[in-house]
Length: 259
Image (cartoon, rainbow, N blue to C red; front, side, top):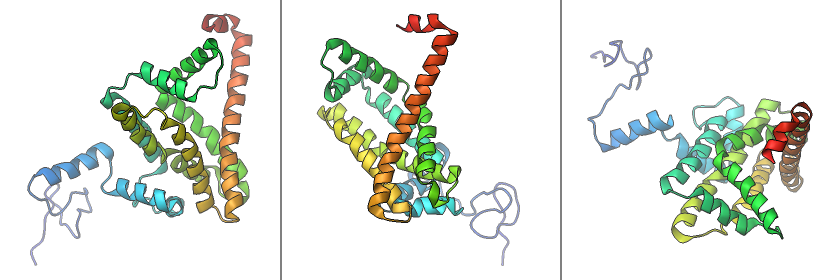
């Protein structure tokens, strides 16, 4: 039998890939299909893992989370990478569609606002503008608080802090696909109020992930999943308040400048 040499390093190849450098044994003629596959690998860093991760997180999140915690980490995109990817795609979609963030913020504030005065609406608009303008930073600032809340509320399930983070990254990241789709609806069909449904659906999905993954009474676990979100936001607000007080004590002029 003729030995098959690696095209890259010259070592003998046994199997589909070279054990020395990872070069694929069978290389097809360069075409659109091979170019697309290469784009997937180099740009996104995965082959068919994205579609598999999206499908299984939609219908059976326990399968994905369990695989990652059990050490089966080739089949799916990792939780941090998946979360970062979707946050980045959200930001890139805004840029790709050419959405005016000032107009977008104004429309979202009008749709969500319950403020009675012009001053209150203006304040809400400024807060929303800060959030959307720094969406990636804000998303990663919030996630540690939700991880902490997940770990605290489900501590009796015997999963450590890092294992709890898998639930949080997937549970918080996956619904962002709906937010990306909603951007297209906003851009082409002026669907502003669709944003009103994204947030509750995202909360319900996270609770569904908790109920699907953790053992025990499903209804009670679902409710505890909703409590995670409340506790996470509460912890975030506490830290922000403490930080604001410390800044006010150390540098009173800083807050006056903001005002």
